[in-house]
Length: 464
Image (cartoon, rainbow, N blue to C red; front, top):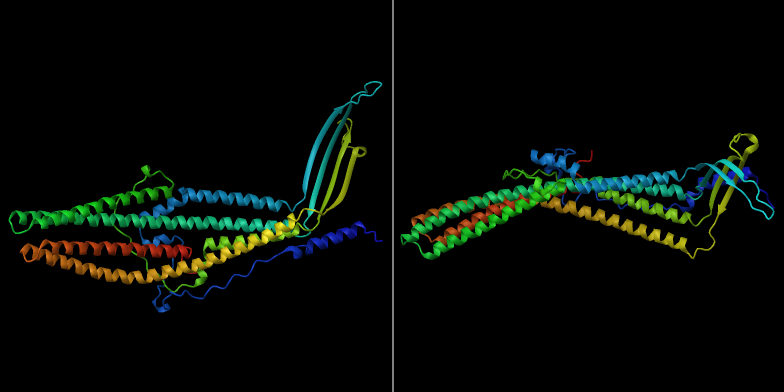
């Protein structure tokens, strides 16, 4: 029978510490390779070559938008929630890192007691003790180190969550701002048409009074005017609601926030359609999902390590006697040291179930990560094709608007000359108004596509 010496036991413990992680470590799967180029990319010869700054919204060259973007990262309440979650993750990481080190406790105790016997009460006795206790769990199977790795990955994910929330809020603010300016442009357009329809109604009324126009012409002119006034009231309410939404994004009450109207929509930014798909690696939401995969696989190692014995070292030392005088003297010194090995024998399969659950969660998180990457690829492809095609639609609709306005001028002149009925004027007016509203909608969609594309590629379309 072997009698291992303390040196032999220590050497064996060190060997287990160095090799323990190999028993329980499970590495996450390798991510699927991304395609070299997006499907909807244009030839490199057609791609814009300019770079995008970190403050990507400045590309729209709107000083009001720049100021709102500066304010939103300070006042937005959603970002404050993400910052608090990051602080909590940091505390968890610090706690897990502390668990790998020994713990040391110190104490000073004093007691006074007496014992009653059948003969007589003995004199009270005093006891004073000054002690220090140290314990250290040896990380044989990597449980503590993998818990720290998991906490680090969770903290990294929280950092990426904060960046993702910031990017989302910035993009939402930009889109809300564009929609507000589009509503203002629509207000101005409808106000202009209301005035034109009022003049048409006055002209039709004069012609009716002169007997050269029918009552149906007057009623048609009134219907068109009233319908446009209704649309104007709706656009005014929509503009107010969008302003309220911007106030909430900025973290202020709607009653204390207002933007002077400009009725000007920023110009769309030229998009370099030739984009490397590796830009998706910069997206913070994808980075957060990747870190959560690492944390999930680290948790597998933690649960597997629980199947093995736990080895801990303990030591205590102190002084004790019946008075505090000369307490710190050699005769009063007490100490002990020990090694503890603990192994659970029966637990009803709890540890194995925990290990199986950790593996299932890891598979779930991995699939969610892969789905997120696929969705990100689709989002970029969708907005690439929108950004590329909407400019063609804007150009075509601009030509359509010019034709509709020219037709309106001709028909109005014919109506004044009495060669056509008012129904022709009404149709031409409606056609011109619809053409201008459609052009405004296309310009707003174009801004939304570029803004969303910038969000989808983390705010820039170069890799540096």
